[in-house]
Image 1 (cartoon, protein in one colour):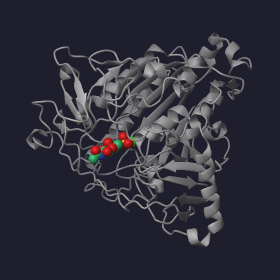
Image 2 (cartoon, protein in one colour):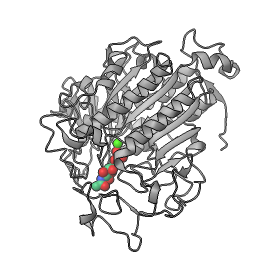
Image 3 (cartoon, protein in one colour):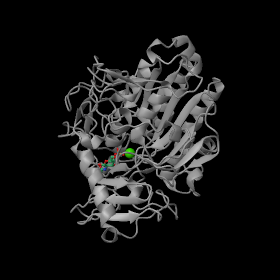
Length: 518
Ligand code: NG6
Ligand code: CA
Protein backbone atom coordinates (compact mmCIF):
# COMPACT_ATOMS: atom_id res chain seq x y z
CA UNK A 1 0.00 0.00 0.00
CA UNK A 2 1.33 3.39 -0.98
CA UNK A 3 2.06 5.82 1.80
CA UNK A 4 2.82 9.30 0.71
CA UNK A 5 6.06 10.54 2.10
CA UNK A 6 5.89 14.29 2.06
CA UNK A 7 8.50 16.30 3.86
CA UNK A 8 10.17 13.99 6.27
CA UNK A 9 10.66 14.90 9.91
CA UNK A 10 13.58 12.93 11.25
CA UNK A 11 13.75 12.39 14.95
CA UNK A 12 17.27 12.29 16.25
CA UNK A 13 18.07 8.94 17.78
CA UNK A 14 18.54 9.02 21.51
CA UNK A 15 20.18 5.64 21.70
CA UNK A 16 23.43 7.33 22.61
CA UNK A 17 26.39 5.56 21.10
CA UNK A 18 24.21 2.76 19.92
CA UNK A 19 23.41 3.75 16.38
CA UNK A 20 25.78 4.69 13.64
CA UNK A 21 25.55 7.99 11.83
CA UNK A 22 23.08 10.84 12.21
CA UNK A 23 21.11 10.13 9.07
CA UNK A 24 18.84 7.17 9.72
CA UNK A 25 18.23 6.66 6.03
CA UNK A 26 21.90 6.02 5.48
CA UNK A 27 22.36 3.90 8.53
CA UNK A 28 24.07 0.63 8.00
CA UNK A 29 21.48 -2.08 8.46
CA UNK A 30 24.16 -4.51 9.61
CA UNK A 31 25.02 -2.18 12.50
CA UNK A 32 21.33 -1.77 13.29
CA UNK A 33 20.92 -5.48 13.58
CA UNK A 34 23.41 -5.57 16.40
CA UNK A 35 22.55 -2.40 18.25
CA UNK A 36 18.95 -1.23 18.03
CA UNK A 37 16.78 -2.66 20.78
CA UNK A 38 13.87 -4.91 20.01
CA UNK A 39 10.63 -3.35 21.16
CA UNK A 40 7.81 -5.44 22.59
CA UNK A 41 4.57 -3.78 23.66
CA UNK A 42 2.58 -6.09 25.91
CA UNK A 43 -0.89 -4.60 25.88
CA UNK A 44 -3.37 -6.15 28.30
CA UNK A 45 -7.10 -5.74 27.90
CA UNK A 46 -9.15 -4.20 30.74
CA UNK A 47 -6.36 -4.76 33.24
CA UNK A 48 -6.75 -2.23 36.03
CA UNK A 49 -4.21 -0.16 37.92
CA UNK A 50 -4.82 -2.25 41.02
CA UNK A 51 -4.81 -5.69 39.33
CA UNK A 52 -1.09 -6.53 39.60
CA UNK A 53 0.76 -7.44 42.75
CA UNK A 54 3.46 -4.87 41.98
CA UNK A 55 0.67 -2.26 42.06
CA UNK A 56 -0.64 -3.45 45.40
CA UNK A 57 -2.98 -6.33 44.52
CA UNK A 58 -2.99 -8.87 47.32
CA UNK A 59 -5.51 -11.43 46.13
CA UNK A 60 -3.69 -12.30 42.94
CA UNK A 61 -0.02 -13.05 42.29
CA UNK A 62 1.71 -11.75 39.17
CA UNK A 63 5.37 -12.75 39.66
CA UNK A 64 6.43 -12.32 36.03
CA UNK A 65 5.05 -8.81 35.76
CA UNK A 66 6.47 -7.99 39.19
CA UNK A 67 9.89 -9.04 37.98
CA UNK A 68 9.60 -6.74 34.99
CA UNK A 69 8.79 -3.90 37.37
CA UNK A 70 11.67 -4.79 39.70
CA UNK A 71 14.08 -4.74 36.78
CA UNK A 72 12.67 -1.66 35.12
CA UNK A 73 10.59 1.45 35.67
CA UNK A 74 7.15 1.21 37.21
CA UNK A 75 4.95 4.19 36.31
CA UNK A 76 2.19 5.34 38.59
CA UNK A 77 0.56 8.08 36.53
CA UNK A 78 0.21 6.75 33.00
CA UNK A 79 -3.00 7.07 31.04
CA UNK A 80 -4.49 5.13 28.18
CA UNK A 81 -5.94 7.57 25.68
CA UNK A 82 -9.48 6.27 26.16
CA UNK A 83 -11.58 4.30 28.61
CA UNK A 84 -12.41 1.66 25.95
CA UNK A 85 -10.40 -0.44 23.59
CA UNK A 86 -10.83 0.73 20.01
CA UNK A 87 -10.09 4.42 20.56
CA UNK A 88 -7.18 3.63 22.88
CA UNK A 89 -5.59 1.26 20.41
CA UNK A 90 -6.21 3.56 17.48
CA UNK A 91 -4.45 6.38 19.32
CA UNK A 92 -1.55 4.25 20.53
CA UNK A 93 -0.80 2.91 17.07
CA UNK A 94 -1.25 6.18 15.14
CA UNK A 95 -0.38 8.98 17.57
CA UNK A 96 -3.66 10.64 16.56
CA UNK A 97 -6.43 11.23 19.10
CA UNK A 98 -9.33 8.92 18.32
CA UNK A 99 -11.83 11.62 19.23
CA UNK A 100 -10.68 13.62 16.22
CA UNK A 101 -11.91 10.87 13.93
CA UNK A 102 -15.43 9.49 13.47
CA UNK A 103 -15.95 5.75 13.68
CA UNK A 104 -13.34 5.07 16.35
CA UNK A 105 -15.71 3.89 19.09
CA UNK A 106 -15.84 0.24 20.23
CA UNK A 107 -15.84 -1.60 16.90
CA UNK A 108 -17.92 -4.54 15.75
CA UNK A 109 -16.11 -7.69 14.67
CA UNK A 110 -16.99 -6.97 11.06
CA UNK A 111 -15.97 -3.29 11.08
CA UNK A 112 -13.87 -2.17 8.14
CA UNK A 113 -10.36 -0.90 8.79
CA UNK A 114 -10.46 2.05 11.17
CA UNK A 115 -6.84 3.03 10.61
CA UNK A 116 -6.60 3.90 6.96
CA UNK A 117 -3.77 2.29 5.02
CA UNK A 118 -2.59 5.79 4.14
CA UNK A 119 -1.98 6.61 7.79
CA UNK A 120 1.52 6.17 9.13
CA UNK A 121 1.41 3.74 12.03
CA UNK A 122 3.80 2.74 14.74
CA UNK A 123 4.40 -0.49 12.82
CA UNK A 124 5.19 1.45 9.62
CA UNK A 125 7.69 3.44 11.61
CA UNK A 126 9.50 0.35 12.84
CA UNK A 127 9.34 -1.38 9.48
CA UNK A 128 10.91 1.59 7.75
CA UNK A 129 13.76 1.50 10.23
CA UNK A 130 14.53 -2.08 9.32
CA UNK A 131 12.57 -3.87 12.03
CA UNK A 132 10.62 -7.07 11.54
CA UNK A 133 7.12 -6.23 12.78
CA UNK A 134 4.27 -8.36 14.10
CA UNK A 135 0.93 -8.12 15.88
CA UNK A 136 -0.60 -10.81 18.05
CA UNK A 137 -3.91 -11.13 19.85
CA UNK A 138 -6.67 -8.62 20.11
CA UNK A 139 -6.93 -6.24 17.16
CA UNK A 140 -10.32 -4.50 17.42
CA UNK A 141 -9.53 -1.90 14.78
CA UNK A 142 -11.44 -3.31 11.83
CA UNK A 143 -10.34 -5.42 8.89
CA UNK A 144 -10.96 -5.23 5.18
CA UNK A 145 -11.92 -2.26 3.08
CA UNK A 146 -15.67 -2.33 3.79
CA UNK A 147 -17.45 -2.86 7.08
CA UNK A 148 -19.96 -5.70 7.20
CA UNK A 149 -19.06 -7.06 3.79
CA UNK A 150 -15.93 -9.07 4.41
CA UNK A 151 -15.68 -12.47 2.82
CA UNK A 152 -14.10 -14.46 5.65
CA UNK A 153 -13.57 -17.41 3.32
CA UNK A 154 -10.96 -15.67 1.21
CA UNK A 155 -7.96 -13.45 1.94
CA UNK A 156 -9.07 -10.05 3.21
CA UNK A 157 -8.28 -7.41 0.60
CA UNK A 158 -6.73 -5.14 3.19
CA UNK A 159 -5.53 -5.61 6.70
CA UNK A 160 -2.54 -5.32 8.96
CA UNK A 161 -0.02 -5.85 6.20
CA UNK A 162 -1.18 -2.45 4.91
CA UNK A 163 -0.47 -0.92 8.30
CA UNK A 164 3.17 -1.90 8.61
CA UNK A 165 2.92 -5.37 10.13
CA UNK A 166 5.00 -8.06 8.39
CA UNK A 167 3.17 -10.79 10.25
CA UNK A 168 -0.02 -11.01 12.27
CA UNK A 169 -1.97 -13.59 14.18
CA UNK A 170 -4.95 -11.81 15.62
CA UNK A 171 -8.56 -11.84 16.73
CA UNK A 172 -10.64 -9.46 14.60
CA UNK A 173 -12.21 -7.73 17.61
CA UNK A 174 -12.80 -9.07 21.12
CA UNK A 175 -13.46 -12.60 22.36
CA UNK A 176 -17.08 -11.63 22.96
CA UNK A 177 -17.61 -10.58 19.34
CA UNK A 178 -17.89 -12.74 16.24
CA UNK A 179 -16.10 -13.94 14.15
CA UNK A 180 -14.57 -16.31 16.73
CA UNK A 181 -11.56 -17.28 14.63
CA UNK A 182 -7.94 -16.16 14.43
CA UNK A 183 -6.74 -14.26 11.39
CA UNK A 184 -3.22 -15.03 10.25
CA UNK A 185 -1.79 -12.77 7.57
CA UNK A 186 -5.22 -11.70 6.27
CA UNK A 187 -6.75 -15.19 6.21
CA UNK A 188 -8.73 -17.18 8.72
CA UNK A 189 -6.17 -19.41 10.43
CA UNK A 190 -6.86 -23.14 10.23
CA UNK A 191 -9.62 -22.40 7.75
CA UNK A 192 -12.09 -25.25 7.50
CA UNK A 193 -13.46 -25.52 3.94
CA UNK A 194 -16.27 -27.76 5.14
CA UNK A 195 -17.67 -24.92 7.28
CA UNK A 196 -17.74 -21.63 5.33
CA UNK A 197 -18.01 -18.59 7.56
CA UNK A 198 -20.80 -16.00 7.50
CA UNK A 199 -20.97 -13.06 9.89
CA UNK A 200 -23.69 -10.49 10.50
CA UNK A 201 -24.30 -7.91 13.18
CA UNK A 202 -27.85 -7.43 11.95
CA UNK A 203 -29.65 -10.73 11.74
CA UNK A 204 -29.20 -14.35 12.61
CA UNK A 205 -28.62 -17.13 10.08
CA UNK A 206 -31.42 -19.59 9.68
CA UNK A 207 -31.15 -22.54 11.99
CA UNK A 208 -28.37 -21.09 14.17
CA UNK A 209 -29.10 -21.12 17.90
CA UNK A 210 -28.69 -17.92 19.90
CA UNK A 211 -27.97 -17.25 23.55
CA UNK A 212 -31.33 -15.55 23.87
CA UNK A 213 -33.39 -18.40 22.45
CA UNK A 214 -31.26 -21.33 23.55
CA UNK A 215 -29.78 -20.50 26.96
CA UNK A 216 -29.51 -24.24 27.62
CA UNK A 217 -26.60 -24.32 25.13
CA UNK A 218 -24.50 -21.88 27.16
CA UNK A 219 -22.60 -24.64 28.89
CA UNK A 220 -19.38 -22.71 29.51
CA UNK A 221 -20.55 -19.23 30.58
CA UNK A 222 -23.91 -17.54 30.94
CA UNK A 223 -24.40 -13.87 30.15
CA UNK A 224 -25.24 -11.33 32.83
CA UNK A 225 -26.15 -8.72 30.25
CA UNK A 226 -26.09 -8.74 26.44
CA UNK A 227 -23.93 -11.42 24.79
CA UNK A 228 -27.02 -13.32 23.67
CA UNK A 229 -26.49 -13.75 19.95
CA UNK A 230 -24.22 -16.42 18.37
CA UNK A 231 -23.14 -19.30 20.59
CA UNK A 232 -19.57 -20.49 20.15
CA UNK A 233 -17.90 -22.91 22.56
CA UNK A 234 -20.92 -22.78 24.86
CA UNK A 235 -20.59 -19.00 25.28
CA UNK A 236 -22.95 -16.34 23.93
CA UNK A 237 -21.40 -13.57 21.81
CA UNK A 238 -22.19 -10.21 20.26
CA UNK A 239 -23.11 -10.65 16.59
CA UNK A 240 -24.29 -13.61 14.55
CA UNK A 241 -22.07 -16.19 12.96
CA UNK A 242 -22.42 -19.36 11.00
CA UNK A 243 -19.72 -21.91 10.19
CA UNK A 244 -16.08 -21.82 11.18
CA UNK A 245 -15.82 -25.51 12.05
CA UNK A 246 -12.29 -26.40 13.07
CA UNK A 247 -11.16 -22.78 12.81
CA UNK A 248 -13.34 -21.67 15.73
CA UNK A 249 -11.30 -20.82 18.76
CA UNK A 250 -11.73 -22.40 22.15
CA UNK A 251 -11.61 -19.59 24.67
CA UNK A 252 -9.54 -21.65 27.07
CA UNK A 253 -6.77 -21.89 24.44
CA UNK A 254 -6.63 -18.25 23.31
CA UNK A 255 -3.77 -17.23 25.61
CA UNK A 256 -1.75 -20.32 24.68
CA UNK A 257 -2.36 -19.76 21.03
CA UNK A 258 -1.35 -16.13 20.77
CA UNK A 259 1.56 -16.59 23.17
CA UNK A 260 2.97 -19.52 21.19
CA UNK A 261 2.73 -17.59 17.96
CA UNK A 262 4.59 -14.66 19.52
CA UNK A 263 7.23 -16.99 20.96
CA UNK A 264 7.75 -18.54 17.52
CA UNK A 265 8.13 -15.12 15.95
CA UNK A 266 10.76 -14.11 18.51
CA UNK A 267 12.72 -17.29 17.87
CA UNK A 268 12.62 -16.77 14.10
CA UNK A 269 13.71 -13.14 14.33
CA UNK A 270 16.18 -13.16 17.19
CA UNK A 271 19.06 -12.09 14.94
CA UNK A 272 17.42 -8.90 13.69
CA UNK A 273 15.59 -6.03 15.42
CA UNK A 274 11.88 -6.67 15.81
CA UNK A 275 8.80 -4.83 16.98
CA UNK A 276 6.01 -6.86 18.52
CA UNK A 277 2.57 -5.62 19.46
CA UNK A 278 1.43 -8.36 21.80
CA UNK A 279 -2.17 -7.57 22.67
CA UNK A 280 -3.60 -10.16 25.02
CA UNK A 281 -7.21 -11.22 25.22
CA UNK A 282 -6.79 -11.31 29.00
CA UNK A 283 -8.46 -10.00 31.04
CA UNK A 284 -11.38 -9.07 28.78
CA UNK A 285 -14.68 -10.97 28.90
CA UNK A 286 -15.56 -13.75 28.38
CA UNK A 287 -12.97 -14.73 30.96
CA UNK A 288 -12.40 -18.39 30.37
CA UNK A 289 -8.77 -19.20 31.13
CA UNK A 290 -7.13 -22.56 30.60
CA UNK A 291 -7.76 -25.23 33.18
CA UNK A 292 -4.25 -24.93 34.56
CA UNK A 293 -5.11 -21.44 35.84
CA UNK A 294 -8.52 -22.35 37.21
CA UNK A 295 -8.85 -21.82 40.92
CA UNK A 296 -5.32 -20.39 41.15
CA UNK A 297 -6.63 -17.12 42.55
CA UNK A 298 -9.34 -16.72 45.16
CA UNK A 299 -11.14 -14.32 42.81
CA UNK A 300 -12.57 -16.80 40.34
CA UNK A 301 -12.25 -16.47 36.59
CA UNK A 302 -11.21 -12.81 36.59
CA UNK A 303 -8.34 -13.44 39.00
CA UNK A 304 -7.37 -16.59 37.12
CA UNK A 305 -7.32 -14.63 33.86
CA UNK A 306 -4.90 -12.15 35.47
CA UNK A 307 -2.65 -15.08 36.36
CA UNK A 308 -2.90 -16.37 32.80
CA UNK A 309 -1.88 -12.92 31.57
CA UNK A 310 1.11 -13.07 33.89
CA UNK A 311 2.00 -16.48 32.48
CA UNK A 312 2.00 -15.06 28.92
CA UNK A 313 4.35 -12.30 30.07
CA UNK A 314 6.61 -14.95 31.61
CA UNK A 315 6.70 -16.95 28.37
CA UNK A 316 7.68 -13.90 26.32
CA UNK A 317 10.43 -12.99 28.80
CA UNK A 318 11.71 -16.56 29.00
CA UNK A 319 11.97 -16.73 25.21
CA UNK A 320 13.84 -13.43 25.04
CA UNK A 321 16.25 -14.73 27.67
CA UNK A 322 16.76 -18.08 25.95
CA UNK A 323 17.54 -16.24 22.74
CA UNK A 324 20.06 -14.05 24.56
CA UNK A 325 18.25 -10.86 23.60
CA UNK A 326 16.38 -9.91 26.77
CA UNK A 327 18.98 -7.29 27.75
CA UNK A 328 18.55 -5.37 24.55
CA UNK A 329 14.78 -5.63 24.32
CA UNK A 330 12.66 -2.73 25.44
CA UNK A 331 9.51 -4.21 26.92
CA UNK A 332 6.57 -1.92 27.64
CA UNK A 333 3.68 -3.44 29.52
CA UNK A 334 0.37 -1.63 29.90
CA UNK A 335 -3.39 -1.88 29.42
CA UNK A 336 -5.87 -0.40 26.94
CA UNK A 337 -8.26 0.99 29.57
CA UNK A 338 -9.26 0.64 33.18
CA UNK A 339 -10.79 -2.46 34.71
CA UNK A 340 -14.35 -3.72 34.71
CA UNK A 341 -15.75 -6.35 37.03
CA UNK A 342 -19.08 -7.54 35.59
CA UNK A 343 -18.83 -6.80 31.87
CA UNK A 344 -21.67 -9.04 30.76
CA UNK A 345 -20.95 -12.62 31.85
CA UNK A 346 -21.91 -14.40 35.01
CA UNK A 347 -18.32 -15.18 36.02
CA UNK A 348 -18.76 -14.21 39.70
CA UNK A 349 -16.10 -11.51 39.35
CA UNK A 350 -18.15 -9.15 41.51
CA UNK A 351 -18.98 -11.64 44.25
CA UNK A 352 -15.39 -12.89 44.57
CA UNK A 353 -13.57 -9.56 44.72
CA UNK A 354 -13.18 -9.94 48.47
CA UNK A 355 -11.88 -6.42 48.94
CA UNK A 356 -9.69 -6.40 45.79
CA UNK A 357 -9.81 -3.01 44.10
CA UNK A 358 -9.22 -3.43 40.36
CA UNK A 359 -8.69 0.31 39.83
CA UNK A 360 -6.55 0.66 42.95
CA UNK A 361 -7.24 3.91 44.74
CA UNK A 362 -8.96 5.52 41.76
CA UNK A 363 -12.62 6.29 41.20
CA UNK A 364 -14.54 4.77 38.29
CA UNK A 365 -13.65 1.86 36.03
CA UNK A 366 -13.51 1.15 32.29
CA UNK A 367 -15.93 3.40 30.31
CA UNK A 368 -15.77 6.14 32.97
CA UNK A 369 -14.53 9.72 32.80
CA UNK A 370 -13.18 9.30 36.32
CA UNK A 371 -9.53 8.36 36.63
CA UNK A 372 -10.18 4.63 36.88
CA UNK A 373 -11.26 4.72 33.22
CA UNK A 374 -7.84 5.49 31.82
CA UNK A 375 -5.34 5.15 34.67
CA UNK A 376 -3.38 2.03 33.80
CA UNK A 377 -0.33 0.14 34.96
CA UNK A 378 2.76 0.84 32.85
CA UNK A 379 6.15 -0.82 33.15
CA UNK A 380 9.26 -0.38 31.02
CA UNK A 381 12.20 -2.77 31.11
CA UNK A 382 15.36 -2.52 29.02
CA UNK A 383 18.39 -3.63 31.04
CA UNK A 384 20.92 -2.36 28.53
CA UNK A 385 19.82 1.20 29.07
CA UNK A 386 17.22 1.48 31.84
CA UNK A 387 18.08 1.14 35.51
CA UNK A 388 15.94 -1.27 37.44
CA UNK A 389 13.82 -0.69 40.51
CA UNK A 390 12.76 2.80 39.50
CA UNK A 391 9.33 4.16 40.31
CA UNK A 392 8.07 7.19 38.42
CA UNK A 393 4.94 9.20 39.01
CA UNK A 394 5.56 11.34 35.92
CA UNK A 395 2.31 12.25 34.15
CA UNK A 396 2.33 10.37 30.86
CA UNK A 397 -0.11 9.36 28.12
CA UNK A 398 0.14 6.48 25.69
CA UNK A 399 -0.49 9.01 22.91
CA UNK A 400 3.20 9.91 23.24
CA UNK A 401 4.63 6.45 22.84
CA UNK A 402 4.78 6.55 19.06
CA UNK A 403 6.91 9.72 18.97
CA UNK A 404 8.99 8.47 21.90
CA UNK A 405 9.77 5.14 20.27
CA UNK A 406 10.37 7.01 17.02
CA UNK A 407 13.01 9.07 18.75
CA UNK A 408 14.52 5.96 20.25
CA UNK A 409 15.14 4.38 16.87
CA UNK A 410 15.86 7.60 15.01
CA UNK A 411 12.79 7.22 12.83
CA UNK A 412 11.75 9.55 10.05
CA UNK A 413 8.06 10.31 10.26
CA UNK A 414 6.22 11.66 7.24
CA UNK A 415 5.02 15.21 7.84
CA UNK A 416 1.63 15.25 9.52
CA UNK A 417 1.84 11.72 10.91
CA UNK A 418 1.32 11.00 14.62
CA UNK A 419 0.20 14.64 15.02
CA UNK A 420 -0.79 14.38 18.68
CA UNK A 421 2.24 12.39 19.80
CA UNK A 422 5.14 14.18 21.48
CA UNK A 423 8.29 12.39 22.43
CA UNK A 424 8.71 11.80 26.14
CA UNK A 425 11.48 9.26 25.63
CA UNK A 426 13.63 10.24 28.59
CA UNK A 427 10.59 9.99 30.87
CA UNK A 428 9.76 6.61 29.39
CA UNK A 429 13.26 5.41 30.12
CA UNK A 430 12.97 6.64 33.69
CA UNK A 431 15.71 9.23 33.21
CA UNK A 432 13.69 12.41 33.62
CA UNK A 433 10.53 13.48 35.32
CA UNK A 434 8.87 16.10 33.16
CA UNK A 435 5.13 15.87 33.64
CA UNK A 436 3.14 16.27 30.45
CA UNK A 437 1.55 19.70 30.60
CA UNK A 438 -1.83 17.99 30.29
CA UNK A 439 -3.23 14.64 29.31
CA UNK A 440 -6.58 14.18 27.56
CA UNK A 441 -8.80 11.28 28.54
CA UNK A 442 -11.71 10.05 26.44
CA UNK A 443 -14.62 8.33 28.21
CA UNK A 444 -16.96 5.81 26.57
CA UNK A 445 -19.59 8.48 25.87
CA UNK A 446 -16.97 10.63 24.10
CA UNK A 447 -16.71 12.95 27.06
CA UNK A 448 -13.26 14.52 27.33
CA UNK A 449 -11.38 15.17 30.53
CA UNK A 450 -8.16 17.04 31.13
CA UNK A 451 -5.63 15.77 33.61
CA UNK A 452 -2.65 17.75 34.81
CA UNK A 453 -0.21 16.77 37.55
CA UNK A 454 -2.35 18.77 39.96
CA UNK A 455 -5.90 18.74 38.61
CA UNK A 456 -8.53 16.66 36.92
CA UNK A 457 -11.22 18.42 34.92
CA UNK A 458 -14.32 16.67 33.53
CA UNK A 459 -16.41 18.64 31.06
CA UNK A 460 -20.17 18.99 31.60
CA UNK A 461 -22.53 16.37 30.24
CA UNK A 462 -26.21 15.63 30.79
CA UNK A 463 -25.92 11.84 30.50
CA UNK A 464 -26.78 9.34 33.25
CA UNK A 465 -24.70 9.01 36.42
CA UNK A 466 -24.23 5.27 35.94
CA UNK A 467 -23.38 3.22 32.85
CA UNK A 468 -26.86 2.36 31.60
CA UNK A 469 -26.38 -1.12 30.10
CA UNK A 470 -25.23 -3.31 33.00
CA UNK A 471 -21.78 -2.73 34.51
CA UNK A 472 -22.05 -0.94 37.85
CA UNK A 473 -19.79 1.94 36.94
CA UNK A 474 -20.05 5.67 37.52
CA UNK A 475 -19.81 7.62 34.28
CA UNK A 476 -18.50 10.91 35.67
CA UNK A 477 -21.38 12.73 33.97
CA UNK A 478 -22.38 15.98 35.63
CA UNK A 479 -24.42 18.89 34.29
CA UNK A 480 -21.75 21.27 35.49
CA UNK A 481 -18.03 20.95 34.79
CA UNK A 482 -16.16 19.25 37.62
CA UNK A 483 -12.68 19.85 38.98
CA UNK A 484 -10.78 17.64 41.38
CA UNK A 485 -7.57 18.21 43.27
CA UNK A 486 -5.42 15.20 42.42
CA UNK A 487 -3.49 15.32 45.67
CA UNK A 488 -6.36 13.12 46.64
CA UNK A 489 -6.27 10.23 44.16
CA UNK A 490 -9.97 9.42 44.51
CA UNK A 491 -11.99 12.18 42.83
CA UNK A 492 -14.15 12.91 45.84
CA UNK A 493 -14.87 16.60 46.11
CA UNK A 494 -15.73 18.73 43.09
CA UNK A 495 -13.91 22.03 43.67
CA UNK A 496 -14.82 23.70 40.35
CA UNK A 497 -16.71 26.51 42.10
CA UNK A 498 -13.66 27.38 44.18
CA UNK A 499 -11.29 27.59 41.22
CA UNK A 500 -13.00 29.26 38.25
CA UNK A 501 -9.60 30.28 36.88
CA UNK A 502 -8.43 26.66 36.71
CA UNK A 503 -11.73 25.61 35.15
CA UNK A 504 -11.28 28.27 32.49
CA UNK A 505 -7.72 27.14 31.82
CA UNK A 506 -8.88 23.55 31.34
CA UNK A 507 -11.75 24.56 29.09
CA UNK A 508 -9.29 26.56 27.03
CA UNK A 509 -7.05 23.52 26.58
CA UNK A 510 -10.02 21.53 25.33
CA UNK A 511 -11.26 24.30 23.05
CA UNK A 512 -7.83 24.75 21.47
CA UNK A 513 -7.29 21.03 20.99
CA UNK A 514 -10.72 20.58 19.46
CA UNK A 515 -10.09 23.46 17.06
CA UNK A 516 -7.12 21.64 15.53
CA UNK A 517 -8.19 20.19 12.28
CA UNK A 518 -6.15 17.11 11.46
C1 NG6 B 1 -19.54 -3.69 25.40
C2 NG6 B 1 -19.70 -5.13 25.84
C3 NG6 B 1 -18.55 -5.50 26.73
C4 NG6 B 1 -17.24 -5.22 26.04
C5 NG6 B 1 -17.18 -3.78 25.56
C6 NG6 B 1 -15.96 -3.47 24.78
C7 NG6 B 1 -22.05 -5.85 26.06
C8 NG6 B 1 -23.23 -5.95 26.97
N1 NG6 B 1 -20.96 -5.30 26.58
O1 NG6 B 1 -20.54 -3.37 24.51
O2 NG6 B 1 -18.64 -6.82 27.12
O3 NG6 B 1 -17.07 -6.08 24.94
O4 NG6 B 1 -18.29 -3.51 24.74
O5 NG6 B 1 -14.83 -3.61 25.54
O6 NG6 B 1 -22.13 -6.26 24.92
S1 NG6 B 1 -13.45 -3.09 25.01
O7 NG6 B 1 -12.51 -3.31 26.08
O8 NG6 B 1 -13.14 -3.89 23.86
O9 NG6 B 1 -13.62 -1.70 24.70
CA1 CA C 1 -10.34 -2.98 26.75
